[in-house]
Image (cartoon, rainbow, N blue to C red; front, side, top):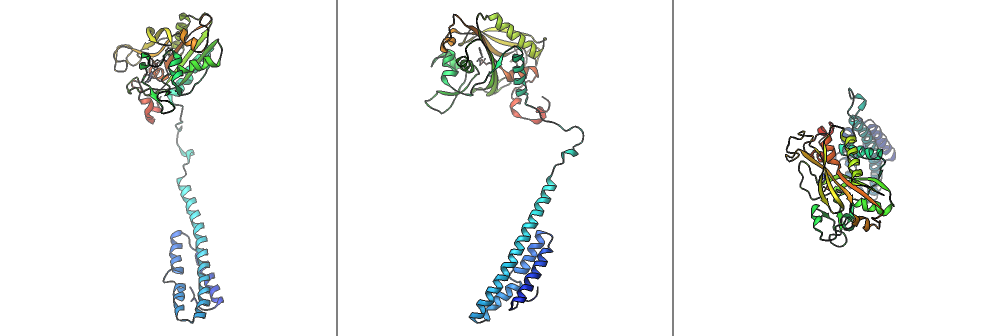
Amino acid sequence: MSGATGDDSNDAVLVAEATARVAGTASLDDLSALESELLGKKSTLAVAQRSLAALSLEAKREAGQRLQAVRKQIEAIVAERRAMLEEVARAERLAADRLDLTEVRGVPWRGHLHLVQRTRDELEDVFVGMGFAVAEGPEVETDWYNFEALNMPPAHPARGMWDTLYLDLGEPETVVLRTHTSPVQIRLMQAKFPPIYAVMPGRCYRRDTPDARHIPTFNQIEGLVIDRGISFADMAGTIEAFTTAYFGPDIHSRLRPSYFPFTEPSAEFEVTCTICGGDGCRTCSHTGWIELGGCGMVDPAVLAAVGLDDEMWSGFAFGFGIDRCAQMRHEIPDMRVLLENDVRLLRQI
Ligand code: FA5
């Protein structure tokens, strides 16, 4: 750089020279090195600024202002160049990070819906094929829908069948994470006058200890039929048709007498354990059978809760575990893997 001397033409030369050198820098490192050469403590400019101390007050002010203006101009030129070089560096980084997917050899692996979602879709399809509609209800429910309207008044011992998760909302223990999809039966009967032929899939929550057949967040598909003259035989036939459609004709199934407060009579629906073929294993607790769900004829008390005349209307309901259906059809020994999201498994199922 030429000497920083005391007149305007020299200043212009100084700035022009700095501009040319800054423009010639090719990298941010080069620019930083040049910046300290042009503006740092040992720069010609800084030396000139320090030397003003010997001048008279008037001359010092005049030369000082001029040199400060030169400094500002050079700073602006450096800043402009730095912004440009940073932009170039960013573009280079992006280009280096770019993943060219067209370079993947062979057929790339494509994602797909989770097995539980696919099972839900397939089960819906089976029932839609039988003429059922599909409905949904909320996962956060009031005690009334989850229990009371289903013939379980407060303190009814059957409430203990479900280990319930309560939400800290409103009065204590009045709002729950639904323990089953059965409350959607109530909402549907309130919303629609019979005849009703519907399935209601959705997520449910229980304080169940996870094991080979249980997870705390799982899915059920509820079924409800309300019409004139519906009998237990209609229910058994519907479940049989569903089993054959979903599992194929080779699966063995059975209904076993059971108890639910909202159905009478009630039954549990079981299939032969597909893991051991019925011989008994850890998954089926060595019984050879796996429970898929509960079912039964809608209790008159439930019809009364929604104002339906049980002399005129009768019906059946069922609630199957969707995860359990997926587990049996795909022969998964431990249901917990459905929540673990291990991609090695997800790719296979
Ligand atoms: C019920 O939940 C009743 N609401 C079913 C019902 C509906 C009966 C309509 C009568 C009429 P249960 O608690 O047995 O019943 O659950 C039904 C099914 O949900 C079970 O057979 C199982 O397949 C599934 N299930 C229940 N708990 C879990 C869990 N923790 N993890 C995975 N699946 C579960």
